[in-house]
Image 1 (cartoon, rainbow, N blue to C red):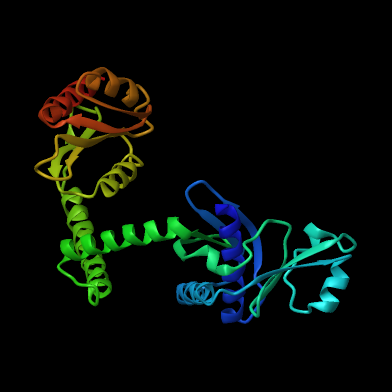
Image 2: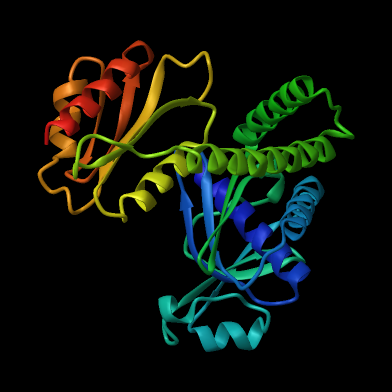
Length: 314
């Protein structure tokens, strides 16, 4: 029953979206799942505003109680001669096979073999829940009937929670979120510059005559990705070992660590050494020349000093 309602709603939705965009859409797949439904459309560009306007029109058609009428024709050519605006996947149907056409009264005509509701009013409510672009395809998820009503209540709850957390209201929440996003971008850029400055100021320490130099340190609040990139960049130099720990905040119980060495120091197996030292206080792994992982906060100092000591003996 639910699939029948969902598929009928999908016909109405595609019909509305095509009219708004002024072109025929290539619907590659319609999938009815236990929890929702998906329509996959190949298109150069589909605007969110067009999708929402189509959603609005579908619900208007539902409230009007548009009839769903079934037509049968001996071939696709015959169907098109009677119904020039017919939507049909010719490759799937075949030109000489019998064609079943589903008409939503005064709105859409599509060749389809699936079961449909007799009237759009049976669909109750149509709601878009997600829109995502993957390559040249758009995935649009939707729900109908009771599932749509329940999802709408969930969305209302989430919106109220967002408003409470951000201090916004229904009229200002969108602008508030945009400002928060922009503020986050600015803070992130400042943090990138700070991280770069801190890392570039670390001086390599020699271990012994002609032995490897070590860049080491423990930090709080740096960007982990940038720390890893720094380590990767430094070990392109010769005779260098990098061992760094970073706590994302003062409240973190675990520190992210990176342990890496230059290719010339092939006698140092970072992966083996890391697992020996961190077997009881952390986890991680990688290659012989580059390892990432996490270490308990209270063990970070001992972890780094042990690596420095072991490297000095190589």
